Length: 145
Ligand SMILES: C=C(O[C@@H]1C=C(C(=O)O)C=C[C@H]1O)C(=O)O
Image 1 (cartoon, rainbow, N blue to C red):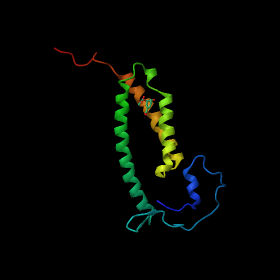
Image 2: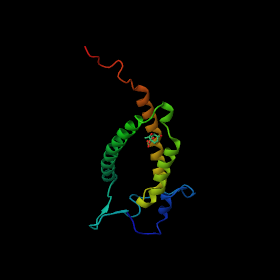
Image 3: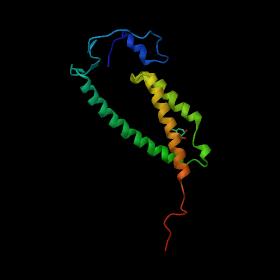
C-alpha cells in the first residue's frame, strides 16, 4: 500500500467516482512506479504474469471463504418458515452498506465493495430460495423395512 496523500488515484477508492474525461494516452509500459511496497523494502510487480499469479492465489482464498459463507447461508434457511421469509431486504442493505462503509478503512475501493456484496447477497438469496424449495423433509426418503 501507499502512505502518500497526494496520489490522485486515491479518489478512485470512494463513491461516487470522480467525473474525469477518458484518457487518450498511449503510454509505454510499465508506466509510473510500483505501488506495492513490502516491509523488507522490495516492491511489486515486475510483470503482468507475476501479478496474475498473486491474483490466482487470492481468488482461491476468496473461493474458500465464499464456500464457508454459503454453508452458513444454507443453515440460515432452516430458520425461515416460508419462502417469502428467505429474502430480508433490510438485512441485505445492512450487509452491503456495512461493506461500503468499511471499505476505506482497509483501502478497498468502495465501488468494488458495493458490487461484490450486491453479487454475494443477490446470489445467496437465490441459493437460499433453492434450498428452501428443494427440502423434502423425511417423506420419500429411505423407509424402514
Ligand atoms: C442469510 C440470510 O438470508 C438472506 C441472505 C443474506 C446474506 O447472504 O447475508 C442476508 C439476508 C437474507 O436476505 C439472513 O437472513 O441472514
